[in-house]
Amino acid sequence: MVKNSIIGIIGVPQDLGASRRGVDMGPSAIRIAGLKKKIETLGYNVVDFGNIACHDIDTDIPEKEKGEKNLRFLTQIVDMSYNLKATVEKVVHNNFFPLILGGDHSINIGTMAGMKALHNGKTGIIWIDAHGDFNTHETTPSGNIHGMPFAVITGRGHPDLLKIGPSPTVIEENAVLIAARDIDKEEAKLLKQSKVTVFTMREIDEYGMAEIARKAIKIATKDTSHLHVSFDIDAVDPSIAPGTGTAVDGGITYREAHLLMELIHESSKLSSLEMVEVNPTLDVRNKTAKLAVELIGSALGEKIIP
Image 1 (tube, helix red, strand yellow):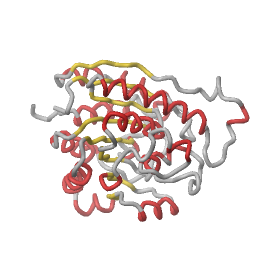
Image 2 (image 1 turned 45 degrees about the vertical axis):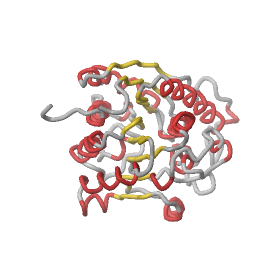
Image 3 (image 1 turned 90 degrees about the horizontal axis):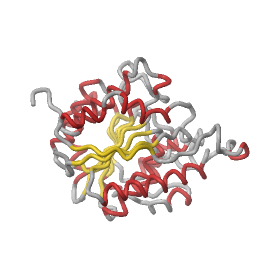
């Protein structure tokens, strides 16, 4: 079992952090793919807290706020982050295991802010992603905030984003990136200057997922009280997970993804989980959302032979 036997689901239907629309429907797609039933079959109780309020680009954002260059929709994403922070605090305070469904990856800023309030920042993180998400407003080539959250939670970025936690909201020495294969030039410099451990697809190819996963778990949990896993579905190869907005060829396989989550569960350290960037408008018969449900199942203890 994970640290708490009651799973608290929080949906975050936001797509403002990304360039492509549709990821705001990710939480609904994951629920429709049978999330609650999957979790209950593993022996957990489930409380779904519904979706938090997020801004809609079509209805409540003034035209003048849509053209920001280096921090697109900063005001709205900050607002969402505080909403999510409060909801995560509520879930953790009630001793539930937080399961957060995105939405684009910028939601992690609010997730980790909520964790810090009750975990005193003693949190390690495994960030599973094709991208580094380690840009700041000074390095970003796109201005999309979903490319910045990993930097923000380690204490780098715009002051309005940093003060939400306040950041840092994780221990940098206990932060691990797995499955990276598309890193921006300036972002790579920031990662090299940091104390974040990065396992690219090269390391996974060379050493195998089992060894990389065990190393990552050891690093992320050393002298920490909690382990958060943030899984961007684009870490998986797009042949298996087509429903995502920033797909990059050469990702982890179906079994590598499951093995990683199975080993995380077996560590008995997992305290919270986030699944992001599922975009049903780009999916094929909800294939990617179904994969997301399966991976959540593995993280919560589902086995081939129970």
